[in-house]
Amino acid sequence: MKKIIPTTIIVLICFLIIFILASGFFYQNTDYEFSEDFFKISVSFFGDASSSRAFSFFTRDESYKDICNIQLDPAEENEQTPNFRDRDNIIIKAESHNTYMLYPSQLRHYGVADSLEKGTKYFYRVGSQQKRAWSAWGYFVTDDQDSDFMFFHITDSQSKEEAEFEAYRESLSKAYQTAGIPEFIITTGDLVETGLNTQEWDLFFDKTQDFMFKTTFAPANGNHELLSTPIYYHFHLDTPKNQIRYSFEYGNALFIILESNTLDYKNQSAWMQEVFAASDKEFKIVAFHKAPFSSGNHAAQKDVTAIRNQVVPFLYEHGVDLVLNGHDHIYCRTYPLINDEVGSWDSRTQTKVGDASKITYKNPNGVIYSINRSIGSKFYTKSKTMNDHLIEFGDQERVLKPVFSKVIIKDNTLNYISYEYDRGDTDEVRIIDWFEIEK
Ligand SMILES: [Fe+2]
Image: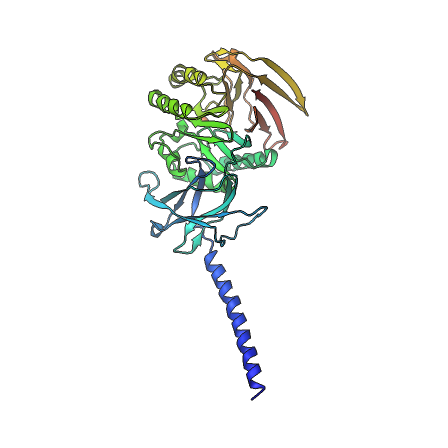
């Protein structure tokens, strides 16, 4: 009898241990179930960059309608991998809707996370708590509101088939390797060749999702998107549905993304007026697709002339420092311009930094416009146009090398560094243009 009791207790304890281990195992497996049902996942700005982010993603399975979520897990210091089990996790219910016109077999889900902590890294995943199915995870970092940050300007990935999207992927990968992980990426339009082609968007995300998982995306609308709906559906933005225009403040800078698929800028100017009036940021940066100053083919066209007449004077008047453009698929960058004339500066110095040469404009009076060629694989030729005297740096011929730019804002300086990637040939990267605005 004496022997039986301890043996029973030992057996019971063993069962108990096995049960605890097993239940933990099963809990973990169900809670962490990875599913490929969720795709085209994006993080974008929506209001205050220090306390909010917006999410958009798709499923093909209709049964996910109205039961999707976004889960966020604030990272501990130096934490590299989330566990999504901490008590401070945030679960947000996503809205769902069909996008019959554009993507008949896909269901779109979106939501906004606000009340986030500033200067904090958040892991996230999207999925359905009810179905215990979750996507792979990504992360973003909220703005810490200091004046030291870095972002990328890229443009015109404009791909239509797998090999072109693969080229875009290689260039984006090279940009991360060369310039580090950006706090956000501004892409100035023509993300795909045909905005209404679902397969192109599927490929766009499929090829670069792992890079998008590491940052926040701020897209402008391009003419190849055709309508505003493709961008509107793939990135949840605080914008009217018929026009992609929104703004955000980040660090000591104000960013305005404009819609340039229009000939009439009256309502955007009224809206911009309010945005400028509400911001006291040191740097003002505006991004849109169609470049008003260019040595490319589009400069003399009616839609571009409309920008020069209606938008350019307005930007100078409101103290804009830098305008990010695309559309012409060449590398082209202006002097600081007062409307359509070369402006002025206290000094303009050139310094050697390694193999590169950096031009510093001290207290420029004027707006610098930059066209970033293309991060894809479609390149155009420089043409003889009326803007040549306004260009400080530009292509002299058709260059078949993708470009990406890194922008660093620190205290009273803005550095814009453009890299050319000799993809598929030497695979080397070199700085082709580096300018600094010092205030
Ligand atoms: Fe383009």
